[in-house]
Amino acid sequence: MVRLVWGLLGLGCILIATAFVETPSIYLDWRPAVLVIGVMVSFTFTRHSLDAVFRGILHGVADEGTIAAIRTMRSTTHAAGGLGLLMGLVAAMETSQGPSLDGQAIQSAILAPIYAVFVAELLIAPILHRRIAQQHLTNA
Image 1 (cartoon, one colour):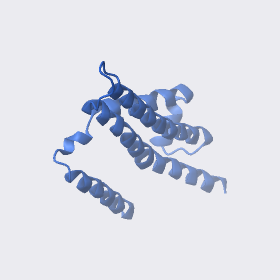
Image 2 (cartoon, helix red, strand yellow; image 1 turned 180 degrees about the vertical axis):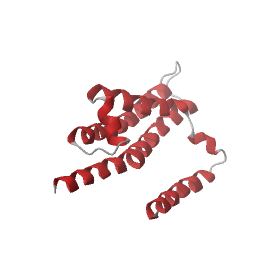
Image 3 (cartoon, helix red, strand yellow; image 1 turned 90 degrees about the vertical axis):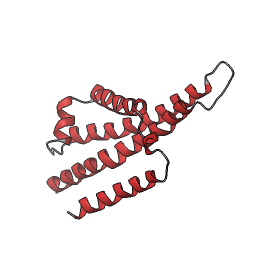
Image 4 (tube, rainbow, N blue to C red; image 1 turned 135 degrees about the vertical axis):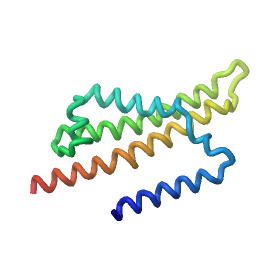
């Protein structure tokens, strides 16, 4: 129950921070979200089986294979954020007249790492650390 309260408090802080912007919808863009989630899923399943990922996330299995799969998800999510940043900056720089600050490209460049950190550290990392702790308890 205490974890839920702290989680809601953190989410509330994020929502309050977005309230200082005239249009909070600027934080929502499907392009970097698709990039981050798509790269995370595709490269995780390239390396690990679908079964290992789902056993670790949904069923609470804490063996070496599931922990490795969750670690891969976390690292590929961070990599996707960096890739999105670079792709957005390249898109902003590519115009016939030279570099320009294209709003949509810059927005995607900034949001991709934000989405990646959110997914990797606020969603995947707690699951990973919980599975590692479970594994240590069963091995002790």
